[in-house]
Length: 185
Ligand SMILES: Nc1ncnc2c1ncn2[C@@H]1O[C@H](COP(=O)(O)OP(=O)(O)O)[C@@H](O)[C@H]1O
Ligand SMILES: [Mg+2]
Image 1 (cartoon, rainbow, N blue to C red):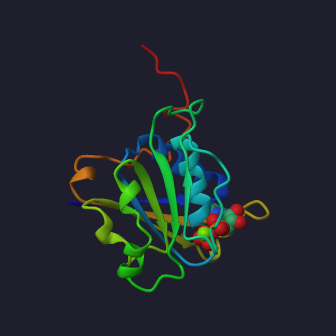
Image 2: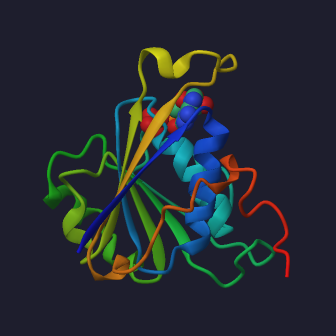
């Protein structure tokens, strides 16, 4: 199956909040493939995922390091949860080169995130989330704070893992009537 959602964010922190909520839902074995140009926000998004997964911080663009493993923190929000394996495929040219970095050892026990992975890393798992970050142009930036820029997050879910999973609620903080408030009984 394939399903898709689109979210608009107006600052890096908003992108991270969406990613953090998603990180709270992820399970060992999940694969995320991030695309979007340089500076689109792939690493920023991964930092939010790391917060939601409760893994060791310090997620950066691994320019000269292909793979970094961020272990799950026993005192984080998800003790005993999956580690985060953060891959940057920018300099890789083929899916065979992705295979050469031996992700198989950690794929089943961790959440694997591949920046620049579109067209290269899909074969790693039966199911995946594709996250495309797109810089908004023109009017979408009007009225934003310094340094904040609008982004479109396009999330596509592929495969049986995501059957019946609805991600439409991820950005719910923008709606004052939604889950920020205590439910009333
Ligand atoms: N709405 C937004 N979402 C994500 N990042 C944003 C947004 N607005 C501004 N930024 C900035 O854009 C930059 C994205 O950089 P980075 O995450 O390293 O991109 P990439 O990994 O895709 O090359 C960061 O400096 C971040 O603060
Ligand atoms: Mg990056």
